[in-house]
Image 1: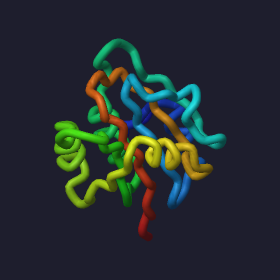
Image 2: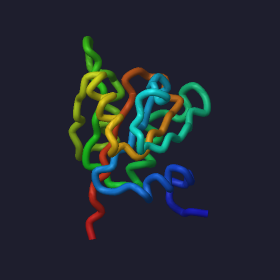
Image 3: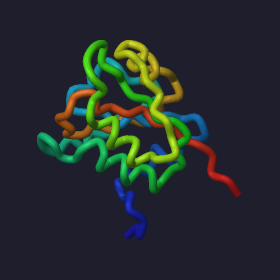
Image 4: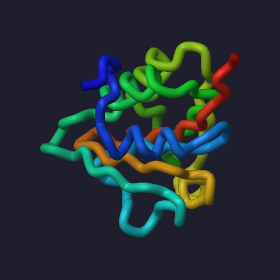
Length: 138
């Protein structure tokens, strides 16, 4: 048994194979994972039930396992910033969110650097976050 917070075997395997610059998408329940993920991405379904787990719960555990150097989100075309963005900022206090429109976000996820897509049961809209793995300093 592992003593660390992240114990999911498939996620650990994908992260162990990743490196600096690799990307991880933590997706809400609306993300089109069957058509919008990169060719190198492993797909892990954690969507147990509506609202379980949330994107922020997954993010909270992931940030203990890998360094994160960038976090990108999908900005709506109109209206105010989604409330979940403030939760992302609280989880990642040393980062500024990179904002992409919907189709640019999809393009970023489809890049070959995306190594892992984690589907959650998150019901809030615009709750997708694309993380870039940083460097582990010696």
